[in-house]
Image 1 (cartoon, helix red, strand yellow):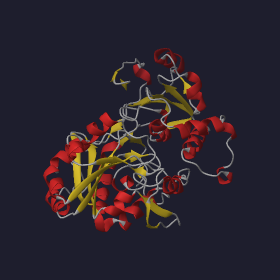
Image 2 (cartoon, one colour):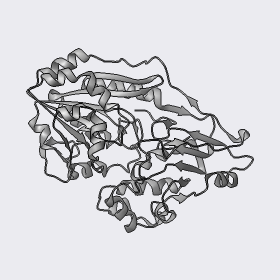
Image 3 (cartoon, helix red, strand yellow):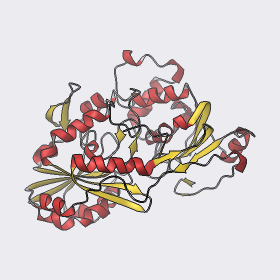
Image 4 (spheres, one colour):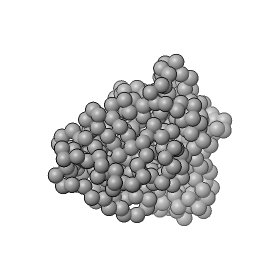
Length: 394
């Protein structure tokens, strides 16, 4: 397994291991729109082009994608780039260059700050205003460069999610994420998902000025989708379902969920590891997360929430709470803990791990030897944040 940037080996009794069926189809059943000529024509015709790129918490091959259309970007009247951070911490200067490659020196590149004022682009169906970074209003064409992966409560990353929450203000993000405890908020589910639907509405509201260039991790490397946002996202999401699904043939007593780079950097990103696979585990079972979390918690507001609510068994009713960012993660973790146990092997201090409703595991081999009994059924998700067990319909 991958741990802390290197290969790590553990031993499991062969009789206990339940192998997963990985459905990574080589040939896609989804229509694959990849019309780079159409994309280039739209970009070259732009007087004010804004290119949105992901931050370092996505595996998107951004630099490669930008290089493939660099000549078209240069034909735009003015081209600017914006790192869509949402509520993630800003990338460091050297990381910004890695994300966008050589083109980050060619075009002005800013980093979104959700705490700054934005411009309202309409009202979403839940009644909340859609407030985005002012550069979106400045542009006559917006190009989304991202990747589509399963997301544990928004359904999928990529597409219009780079607009909202990617470059939305904090108030807009909070209005959206407060729905994240709804049981319909699941990986790869759009229909009926109260977080995903406003994101898709955002794409529709800005469709006249938006183009999209998205990547999906396929069995033989990255696959690309380019064109109008709605068409591109639909095809990329279908392909994501095809390539990310894993199925265990029987319920598990223990799932070892390995969270790989770049999501292994902090606790805030860790949740995808168990959310994507928890329903493969029987009631009373356990998920063991393996993630170095070298950067600690990930942000101050999440740690403040954990200090405010130290016991997952005593959380107030959700309906009685005034929502603040990150709170849905604590409630979702508590809901999972009421059914299964959650453990974490990381570089973090034990008391910090427990603060986020997880049980620390210091010595991985000793813990496995003590936990696995003769009848235990054990599965391994080698890339837990990018795959999903028991896929929900999308």
